[in-house]
Length: 138
Picture 1 (cartoon, rainbow, N blue to C red):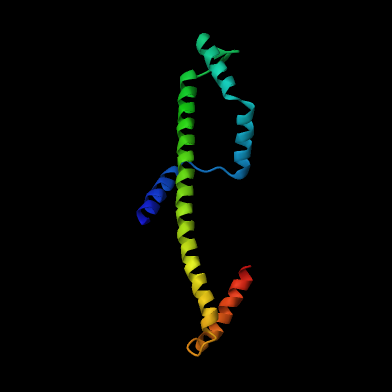
Picture 2 (picture 1 turned 90 degrees about the vertical axis):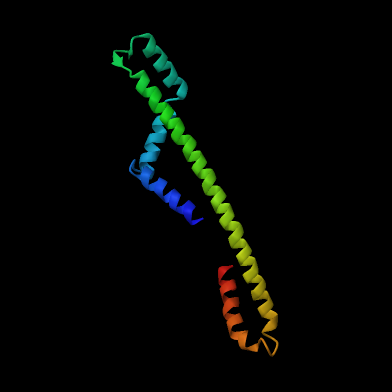
């Protein structure tokens, strides 16, 4: 698992050079993107191609825009995969942590009975401390 963390850290450091957006910047970009549906982009590019790279007196770099859209599609696919990897890692960690917690809680429950025996009497104070921790978490 350590090698996975190292690999993901390397990827994150490489991508960080591109910068990250603040929450406010993301909102602004999302709002702009909502106003320009993909079909509109396709139509403008088609019209620009048909009119020598110009539309309404403005130059439209169709090739550059298509290359950018391909890059965006690739980045979104990578982000989707990254979210899937994150979910898989989190699910695995959760299962392992739950298994540890189950064992610990079983020990705690066993100690509750054992503390009442002569052999377990020295653990009565520790059990009360544990019981307080369990109550505080609920």
